[in-house]
Image: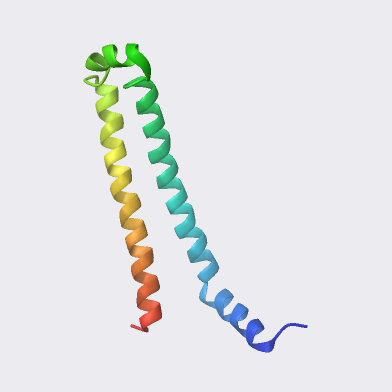
Length: 99
């Protein structure tokens, strides 16, 4: 069978709800990053498409309300993504230091 210390560690992880916390954090990171990535790809396709036509029409499309909204949304999700990563890393550091 397994080592008794490993079994007690797994039991402690389950009792503390660490798995649920990690799933919530991972889900939050995945959601925010997916929204940011999808918006960036949409902005690229709609507002600044590749090629010479994208260069020419970019003067018009980048000033549109939809493109401004997508750009603002990318700024917000980038900020949220950075914040979640900072919180997770700070939490890990605090646990390592025992604070």
